[in-house]
Length: 201
Image (cartoon, rainbow, N blue to C red; front, side, top):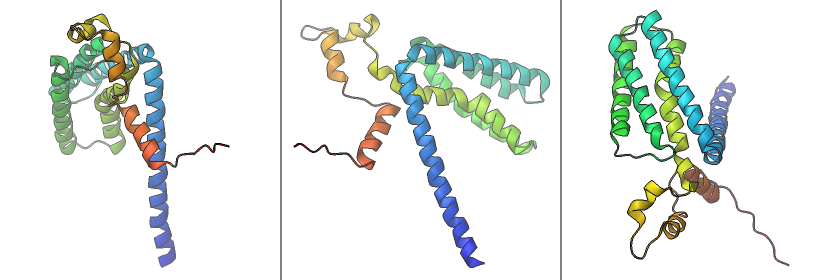
């Protein structure tokens, strides 16, 4: 009887490793796709935001959720639409980004306080959090690496221009400084996985 108990814990550890590797591989693949197809990614995120707004309207009409929770969630989706105006660039000091970050925290607080007082099945609570609260911020998080390979635009070039500096030189000097999700995965891949050394004959 004790052997099966030990095996059950061992199998749980193996399953956690497989799930972690699968999620990491999926995120890496998504980051690669987003980096290659930024215009399609922007349209897809905009579509997801619109669907989420429609879902909030449906929750307001057909469910007994608090009005403050629905209004806060819908207003955060409007802020997400304003963040999309500069996609794939994210201006962390812009008003829409700051307001959307604050509304994300407030939305979590309102949802947790409501669902802790009123009973709903776990699947419905997870459906609300997944579709209405987490999916758009997660899409923004995964698309952070999309701006690493974008050519500089005119609006970006204004602060870069000086007497001894031009847009192209600055772009290529900054190109090797990568800070997005894809660069984190590439660093993890290079540092964790064994490297193949080519033999020179």
